[in-house]
Amino acid sequence: MGGACGSVPTVAGEGAEEPLPEDTEEQLSTGDGTLEFSGRKMNHLPASICTLGDQLYKMYLSGTMITELPDDLYQLHNLRTLALDANKLPELPEAVCSLPHLGRLYLGANRLQGLPMSFSRLQTLRTLWIERNFLHHFPPVLLSMPALRCLQMGDNRLKGLPGDIATCMPGLKGLWLYANRLERVPKVLLRLHGLEILDLDRNRIAVFPDMSGLKGLRLLSFDHNPVKAPPKVGETVTLVGEGAQEFMEEREEQRKQREEEAMEEQEREQQEKEAAKAEGGEEGEGEEKQEEEQYDEEEAEQENPNTDRYSGNREGDYYEEDDEYYLEEEEEGYYPHEEENYYTRGIY
Image 1: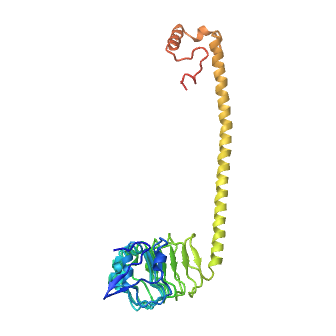
Image 2: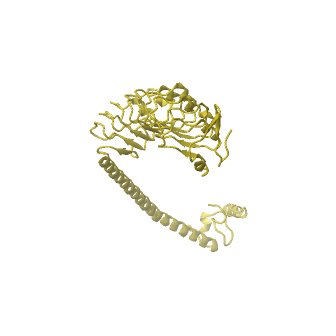
Image 3: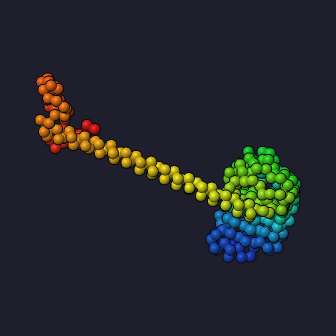
């Protein structure tokens, strides 16, 4: 069951009630569902904490020296964030793997050498920080958690990554591998196309491959590696490392130069189009003037039927049947009537 906000629930056990830590009621009275116990020395977390399932969303137990958690921790069905870092845990308490909606888990600065297979039950987990532990190998159970987005594994003992991480964890966006024992960039990283942040600081990498194929990459840290030049990356990637600042400044200058050249080319093409249009306009005006003169001549002839367009006697050039033909055409509407031109009649 869940305790009401403002009350301090307790749990009966072996004839005695186990109270919640001090100021629990005060912290929950704010309504944000957060309990901050970091830095307090606690031998264990009281089982009565499990009665806060309806109220508790975030719980911070960093540096409390806690080594075990209540078995009924799964009752905290609304818990989204749990911090257990800096507690010197030799292994992860099994109860953590029972939290149904956990999204963020902080396990840094403990003594973990791996993760239990039951960890795969945390299918809602999006962020895992497990830095500063004793991981010699990438925990295989993480490959069954495709929903992970941010994985912080800095300051461990890793020498490589599993080859199927790209297919098993396609949604990974942030990967921190600083201060490990990598001597080369794992090839599988080049297939993590959704990766946005990659930290390879403080490893033993002497040569970086071409990483410009990682189109989603936004930040790459390669500092404190024995490399002679910054890695080759896309133009939008921010680099952190020796020589990175000069490299990015030069890259920015080149980008600006390309943009200026492109603008100059567009302006030149526009000027050429306008010049061609102007030249075509002059020719069109000449043709239009000729059409207008011809049209004026035709109108003048219609107003003065005795004017002969041809040289010589009209009787020698025209025949009576021709006159009749033109008369028929005029009656059928082939020629404009008085005060009407070819454009208003839609002939042209």
